[in-house]
Length: 247
Image (cartoon, rainbow, N blue to C red; front, side):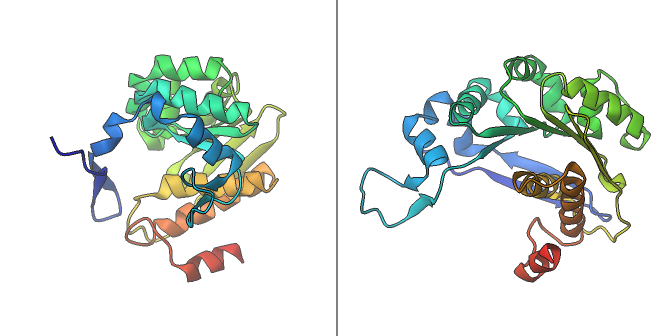
């Protein structure tokens, strides 16, 4: 049999920017804990070059990683998630987890709680749907109030250092175990495509966090980038737009 192809995802975007995704998981279905071996661990957390050849020309990563970000769908491969997270913790790196979908929370609650109870996650991200599922509730996203987000963050902070709930067009809220807080309102913009908005928010939040930004600054960065992404078709911003955001 031919080897499986690389994973692909088709994003169907409606008028108004909402999207539906149809995914072909391909080779990723074959991934397991054994794929995150000592060689991958060294490359990820020590930096270095690909392969055993010291003269290899292509650098995989120039320096060791200080944070491992895990996508929630990895919870469908719980041993892979655990192996990668444990490796990060051994290397002194932070671990962040984005819950990805309320269905992930519903279907993978046991492995999720197990990872949290074992202290393998430092920063936890979710949206309104995922937060409601954590609380065992079902409601429309626009009916999920900031008070509800507060209850969800209290639940999350039983296990992690930083809890963040994104509220779509209403912005986001975050809190840590020390009691520090951050809040950023949403901005009224013309939405073209919401594909990648959540991932972009999380990436920008973590960018600020790793640079010792306050939780308020992290929220502001996350919302600024997420807002920029929904105004373009696709999930990529131009170099010029990134320059504007950095300014």
